[in-house]
Image (cartoon, rainbow, N blue to C red):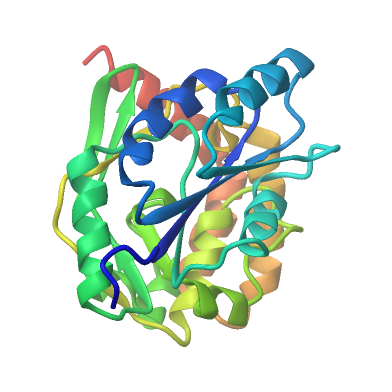
Length: 263
């Protein structure tokens, strides 16, 4: 393979977070020779769209698409997929962050090995305090395992072969919560994940307007996900979803994260 041939497209859905975009692009742009960057603005406020357009205008290696309606992360990711031309895609949340060493290691790995999917470590933070650190393993991300328990990392920590993502028809645009869980489950049915040990992706749980912090949206998503995958999920997983709906786990988890910063 030509060492200068682009192998990876990083797809970043965003809404009203220009400051976060500036931060992550400052890392990614160092590798523009090897990757494509697609940013999909999911109908931000006018001044945010203007700032984002100004920021990307001089960066020819970035493709920016401005949606005329707020369609959600899944639609934005699928929109990005339709323009991706590289062998692999990486769906990266605009409020997450990674070191340049991590991206370099991912690029080099993808040049050497052909994989269906690649997982890397995750560090969750809330207002700069570490909540947890997760190093994924293959065993927890097989189809049989994901039918019984959720994935251990988010899609910001996962790289997918473009052809494989297209084969499962991308993200479910009817789902507005737990989208990562749905994607991992469907992808794992016919594909295998490999693991790369490197510096973790920093997943920021304190950023405003995170879907994980929207209670009603999460509850509706649980019902949809359970109905969609009822025949696939194990009894244990079904019971968990029912209990989490009744006991309002999204609120409890949010409170737990906020209390942990004071511990």
